[in-house]
Each structure stands twice: as C-alpha cells, then as structure tokens.
Image (cartoon, rainbow, N blue to C red; front, side):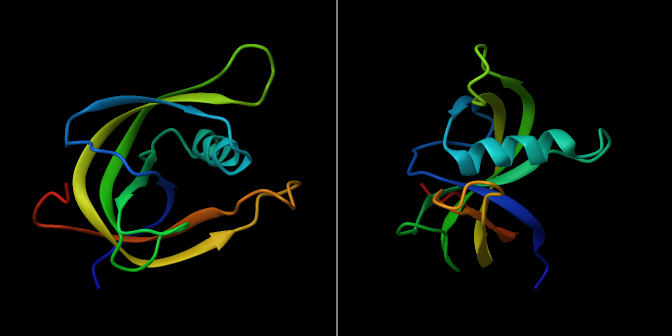
Length: 126
C-alpha cells in the first residue's frame, strides 16, 4: 500500500471540496493536542492531516473517506483557554487504510485522537 502517514485525523461530517479554505475552531482536548503537535513539527515539514468526512461512526475506520488538508495557519485563541483556530486548504480526496487512537496526555477522560494512514483516492467522496 502506498499510503501517506501516519497523519492525525479530524473527524466531522462536512460537505467540503478541494481548494476550499476553511477556518476551524478547535476546542476539544484531542484537537488542542492535535494543534500543539502540528506547531511542534519542523518548519520545513508540511503540516497536513486527514479531514475524515464520510464513512465513520464515532471514529475513523478503514474505508472512511475525506480529504488530505494542508494547514496554512494555527493560532491560539485569546484568553488562554488553550483553544486554537486553524486555517486549512482542502486538498485531494483520500481514504483511511489504517487507523488507531492515541490518548491525550494529561486528559484521561478526553476522547482519543485519531491517527492513521491515508491513501489518495481517484475521485471526490461527496
């Protein structure tokens, strides 16, 4: 399998299309950790993740579909809440080929972050 990853995944039903610019407000502990991890990546490394929009229940699974996204900007929300805003550009369609979860450090009750491998798809999933 020629897959990309491992990449973190944002899981939410959405009707999006390639080249669309989206601003997300990320406030759940798993997605705040997601933002911190992206910010810690070396500058030269592309900041990408899978936006899983279809074919999931409460978590991503093999065959779930979505889009590979490029992060353009991540900023902390004012007020010290730990929340972030994330501007992204929707990229090509993709499909989850392997998925697992990771516990959020210091947040034992939080929903776990989805991580996995993605394969680019030939056509859009919407």
